[in-house]
Image (cartoon, rainbow, N blue to C red; front, top):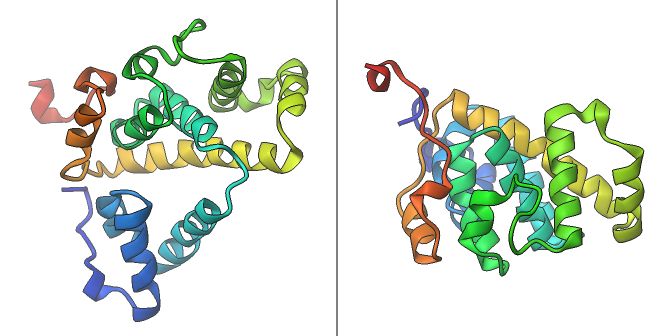
Length: 201
């Protein structure tokens, strides 16, 4: 259980219940996250509602988006986010080996554009002030300005979700790890779990 109690669907205003259910079940198996966000209806309405809307009209390829999200989540060691996005990365045509090595310069399976997206995600996440003109010039060759805005936004937002999930210790939903294993991934693909007093002893 997370560090705050779960807010169930019956406790949510009727106008927000479609967002609650769709984000938790259809957008992804994110129900434990939704139950936490629901403490603040404005977050449920605008943040999760926004991501649902963006999913319907994304201008960034899923493969590039998932490369970026897994990269950021691996840097920040967010077990929850890697567990959820690793199967999507595998479904995009990349191997489980890519997840393990995604932060390495010569990560297997990544083509030149994939590596460009990965390197941009690393720079934005580790020190956004140091994003080089060189990498941005190369990004401009491959992506429209609308795509660059969306990609940068999703990279930045992923960092927020990583910290939110880890700080509140949101648990991975039932079936998520099984999905990762069914797609050829392993638990070794995941960062370590949260450090607590119990597992330090």
